[in-house]
Image (cartoon, rainbow, N blue to C red):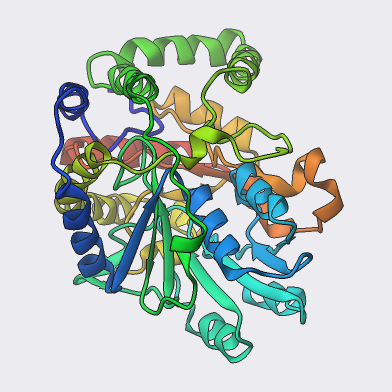
Length: 422
């Protein structure tokens, strides 16, 4: 049986239920209830919601009232609009390289990038890998620099319900594909309010039902195409394309990207363009319907994450030592949530071809490598590790709905792929 590169952490039943609920009156109690749940889970006392992760960052930076030219350090593999919200506030984005072992901030490169103009550092945890960043946290605290941990891919990266997050300020995305999601949205969790969000947030209107229906339709489409019954048909197309028209997938991806860039979806993540202003749709409030979706998503995936961890550990135990050596070692820590299971491939395209021949659809990070986007050229510096991660990292398919037999099949396929070379 073939396995897709990624499956949502909601199912078709959830999506259809959310669609029906969209047209019903929602209780306002859902939002304060969600705040209590997230504060308790991540051990923070305050929680605020926004239309997206990027707007969480925007309003936070705006509330700090930083001087023009103040520096905000971010990681290179990210949505381009994180850079845009920094620039729109007349601040300067500084890219810090990644660690090959953690896919988050490389501490030695951070030391080089810190200056007397640094005001904020945003550490994004990719693939669910959360290393101990206590050194970074202490270092920034001594210099009165705000430290933010972006936990969008790290929900439930805990050991015995204990998280390794070090920053006072946590931010996350609630977009589709996350372990906690509400089709769009973002939040800030914090303990001490040394900033005044109320003075800068201007919620102009609620998001339209038409917008959410588009998100629901996209989610449902992906769920159907990656389902156990339909994906074999999709896999046959991918298999034949790799065998007889290897450049076809590249062309299709380019066409899809171009069409999305011209769509009405202002939240589409990968559009590499400089914005002149914040789109009005970004300022929409986070509503009770979204909170309802998030609560369901949280409760369900808190349980499912434990099952996925068990399956992930079983998968690791079945991989050959040659394969184990090319997986980032932080993935073997007990708090790893297996959001993605990354593996390095020296010849990425060749390995992807071998993967599909062994029944495994795969890809690497879909997020942009912002240091390679021409629009951000004035702010780009060399981040060689991030470039290597973007160009040589692929993901091993894994999902909590897989059986032990599925795991055995996936492990066998991976071992076959890397039997002779990587």
